Amino acid sequence: MNGKIGAILRSYGLLLAMAALALVVAVIQPRFLSGDNILNIMRQLSVLGIVSLGMTIIIIGGYMDLSISGTISLVAVVVISMQQYTSAALSVVTGLVIGVVVGIVNAAVVLLVKAGNGESLILTFGMQTVLQATALLYAKGYSIKAPEGSSFRLIGQGTVGFLASPVLIFLALALILQLMMSKTRSGRSIYLTGGNKEAARLCGIPVSWYIGGMYVITGLMAAAGAIVLSSRTMSATPTMGTGYEMDAIMAVVIGGTSLKGGQGSVTKTILGVVLVGVMSNALNIIGVTPYMQSIVKGMIMIAAVWLDSKKTGGGAAFAKQSV
Amino acid sequence: MPSKAFNLIKSQKALVVLALLFVAMCFASPYFLTASNLINILVQCSINGIMAFGMTFAIIGGEFDLSIGSTMALCGLVSVMLQPYLSIPMVLLLVVAVGGVVGLLNGFLIAHQKANAFIITIASGMLVKGIALTISDGSPVIGSNAAYSTIANGTILGIPHAVTLFFLLLIVAQWVLTRTAFGRNLYAVGGDATVAAYAGIKVRFYKWSIFVITAVTAALGGILLSSKLNTGSPIHGDSVPLTVISSVVIGGTALSGGEGSALRTVVGLLIFSVLDSALNLLNIYPYYQLGLKGLLVIVIVGFDCYARNRKKAVA
Picture 1 (cartoon, rainbow over the protein chains, first blue to last red):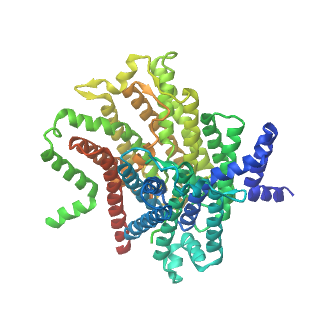
Picture 2 (cartoon, rainbow over the protein chains, first blue to last red):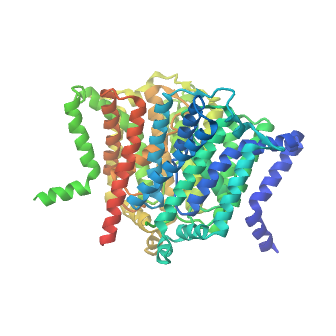
Picture 3 (cartoon, rainbow over the protein chains, first blue to last red):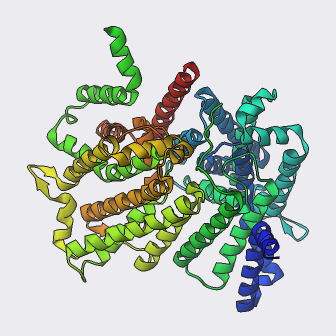
């Protein structure tokens, strides 16, 4: 009996923890469970959600991408500055193209030097710094505001029915990527590449192409996140993306996707993102100061990873393999 | 003979880059090769450098620690805030103990509970930073004891104590890594933990000590920085972990564990500091400096990774 309860706790521990947290907060502050607040939580978490989707794919594939915070900053300043003299659609396309180009460059570097998981971390950190510098140079270090009338604002501030458009964008992208990962050959190949690259190659999977594809998806998701984020405020600062890379990795891992690669899922990440979003909102709504929030979040993260390591047996920080 | 020279260049890429950078700067700026500029370069790399020695141990042992920035901030803050109440030696002792506690927490979760080091150290960094923000209410605190600032700024024969301490710790780190059983076992643990365990090495103890070492060096870094500025601040150190890891890796210590040395780390640190000084002397716009540093990380780590994999493929 005891073992059974333990097993349930281990597989659904995160959901139960979330439910318990929501219950406690709802008792303290009934406003927490109001429709308004729930929609508010969803709007707040959609940008992190979009960015985390890309991070999920690359982590499942056994690599790492820290460059996304630089991509977010760069895309945000470029897209906002373009509102002055061009259409919203063209600016969105430009933003997405930047994301794709960053992904291709990342993949080219990683493949060229045959980097493993750990090295991809440092290489994409270098890329993050370069992109951050480019964003600062482009904006000359200043924040940029878009003109009020632009239709660009609909992306981040519009609504369809009762749902805010950022939430819809997040859910649509999540659905597409979840289907890709679970129903297509590409998805299965990415799982296999992350689980054991050598075996994947021997099975005839074009591993290099998939690694390239994963980096492009991550860059594309970072660009999409940047477009939604900058459209919400109709302004951009050249350091807007700072911290998103770590938050995204955190959301992915809290959802239950292992950093070792080859396992996890998009739906797990949605759960992780929701947990992070609910937690932030709950702490805000019961009036915990931002400084204390950092302490509480740190403790919850540690607890979540600790529980996860009990489940999977842990292991080295990175699997040792190269292309 | 020329092939020997060529081999040296191939095995010491970071050193060659450093030498080229150094020589080029001697010609490019008359101010570069002055005693004050050279000492300035050493001062700049000493604080990050001490933490980089800790990180070298961690990376050789196959782990790394992203919480050191927060630990550094908290320790610097605590040492400034305790000054009105305690004597300086007591303050220093307590602050190193604070670092030790953070290290023990990380060690417990990673070595004992086998949780993932990457996420655990981000999370514990968040926790520690939250503590630093809470006790200082988010604002910097200025030191009240004039003697405290001599810890980093005082000089012997014109050399600041921070630099002296940096070189002392370099000698200790290199000695421990190359001349003691602890060092040899650490390489074995980083190379292959399973094999090390079969050989009778207490892997858990080594993993645990890695995180205590990185946290204590972060405490020392915090003491030196707060002493140098006579200020403790909760927002010091945000970019420290990745910068420190980059200098260790640029020096030539492999992220996959089991190889590397403290001397190589010094080369990596000096490349960053000399480049900083060079770009400032040449009046390069700060944002270009940032971009150049990012490119440098990509190029050096990329080359190193490429060469390592080719060697593996040949063997």
